[in-house]
Image 1: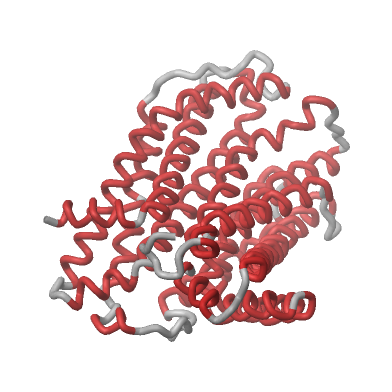
Image 2: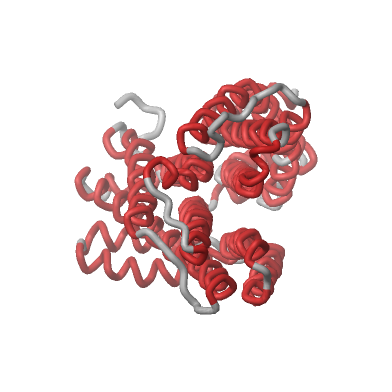
Length: 440
């Protein structure tokens, strides 16, 4: 019975489940492929010089995968709070709801893991070819079938998915049966205390690492800076709703001044639902923070050592971190699509009170830009803190090398992905029937 209900829920929430499935699929591909590349490089003595970069790249891939999968699954479960409340109202017990959510996550995790493991080998072969082209591995990296990378990938696909589902399920069963009748969009609790504790501990850990970096040896400073960025990303994501509410007020005021009607609605939505907005801002923050830290850490290390990379060699760092960036950019599109799809009823309601299609388009665009800008500001602050500490360790000065075109490109791609996800997911609500499920 539980599996039947889980399958019915999967069919009824195709957009959300598709986004979650893609997140798990790409995570397994990324982790498995990166593991195969590292395992292959370990068999070649001439690649010992780049093993450090390969391992750092694999660590980034693993962190990004766990971060995105956990966040996406939590968003998928929590956006169905009214569904869980309805099931509770017809007699389903909290235990049954937890079993239903776990079964649903298991279906997605197993299917996506199987597909991701199959794609890991061609992904590893592609990475090997790119490293040969950029000169990182002139002789190429042998890609063989070994068990460990696939085990690690399956851990990400299933062992991360299930605990994330259980955590989200505990939140879901707290929804009372009468929640289905609640129409208020305002969130009653901005920051639950477990989330606040996790955020404070992660920020404190990141702060300690930042304090330690200037006193470390150069070879240890870069990995520690990357670890500080990861810890700060976790902390900022946990405490992000507080920051999103403040940034929403500031950026919303700017949007309202530039476009009084649509801008005001967009800003109000972010301020009213900061946790929902943070779900879309987190992938942007992660993309900017990790990509900038990795790319500009390599540039800072090269500048401190007097090394100048030209031609194909200049693409070495972007190639290593490129897959993780592509994955997080896709997660930006998925998260924005899921959060905007949740607002379909709100958009239909706005249409009934006279808001026109062009105003709705501008509202969706402004809201996406506000969220993207907030995520960019958080990610930039995290990367700047880590890179400044790294520059101090390498040169004795609070300085770091950076590329404005690379930074602008990251932000532009995140904004474009968010806009695409938001506009596509709300197209039906903006143009279709005023009543969900009725013919247009």
